[in-house]
Image 1: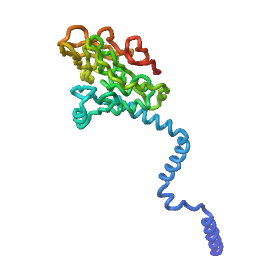
Image 2 (image 1 turned 180 degrees about the horizontal axis):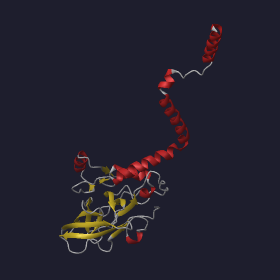
Image 3 (image 1 turned 90 degrees about the vertical axis):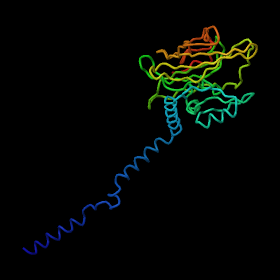
Image 4 (image 1 turned 180 degrees about the vertical axis):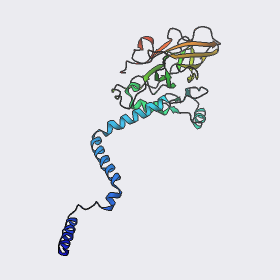
Length: 288
C-alpha cells in the first residue's frame, strides 16, 4: 500500500511538471497596456496612408468651430485702420488687425479663425477675399432656430449703396463625419482701395454686434462722410436679419445727418448658393 501511494505521488508530480506555465509577472502586470499598445499600432498602420486627409479634416472641424464661437468686439470697432499708432494700440488690446499690402498703409480686422478657415474650407476661399475686412464672424440662427455660421466682409460703400462692396457667406454647422467641402478656386483679391468720388458720400460699416435677445439679428453702426466740397457727415444703424433661406436681409434702423436711404436697391446679401454679381455684390455660386 505504501509503495502504491509513492507511485501515485510520483505520477502526480510528473503531471504538474508538464502543466502550462503562467505568464511572466511583467506580462500579468502590464497586460492592459500591452493590449492597448498593439491596438494603437494596428490603428496607426491603417490610418497612416490617410494622414493628410485626416489632418485636414481635423483642422477644418477645429477652425469651423472656432469661427462659429468667435465673439465680435463690443463695442463695435472700425474694421479698417490707416494710422500705424492706432493699429498698435488696437493690437495691444487683443484685436486681430492684419496689415494688407496696398498703395498706402492699411490694416484690416481679420480674426485668425477666419484666416485659417479660409485655408481649409474651399467655400470660404472661393467666395470671400482676404483683402476685405471682416465685419461679422460668428453663429446666428434661422428664425426657426437652426444654427448657421455667418461671415460678412467688406465695410466700404456709398450713401445709397452702403452694401456695395460687401459679401456674405452662410454655412450650416458641420459634424464630425460630414464630408470635406470640395476644392474650388480661391478669391485672392487685388488689394486695391476705392478711389474717392468727389460727388459721393462714402460710408463705412463698423463691426457687427449680435443681438443678445434675438439670435437671428445683427446690428451695424454706419458712418458717412464726403471727401471734398461741402463737408458733410452722418450715419445710422443697420439691422441685418438671417432668413430661413440663408439670405441676410438689411433694414435701416435709424439715420442722421444726411437725407435719403443709405441702402438703396441692395437690401440683402444672398449668403449661400445664389450668385450675387447681378446685384453688384462680389460672390460666386458655391457647393453646400
